[in-house]
Amino acid sequence: MSNLSTLSNVTLIPTDVTDTSSINATVTVVEKATGGRLDYLVNNAGIAICQPLLGVNIVDAKKYCL
Image (cartoon, rainbow, N blue to C red; front, top):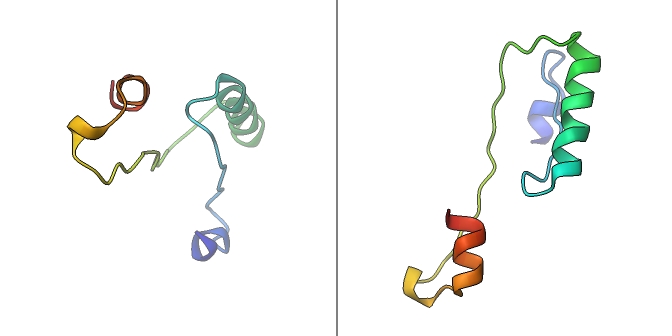
């Protein structure tokens, strides 16, 4: 990410996609920075679970996998 942050035409906005307030804050930042227009969005959100799916707690599976 540090390499991308040096580019003049790239804006990094860390966002917790599981948190509504974080998403809303990101929308506000984008609207202010672009006047409401967004040409490109790269979303690299995700979660890595390094175990067999059957070993994942059902609450976590519903939270992260659905």
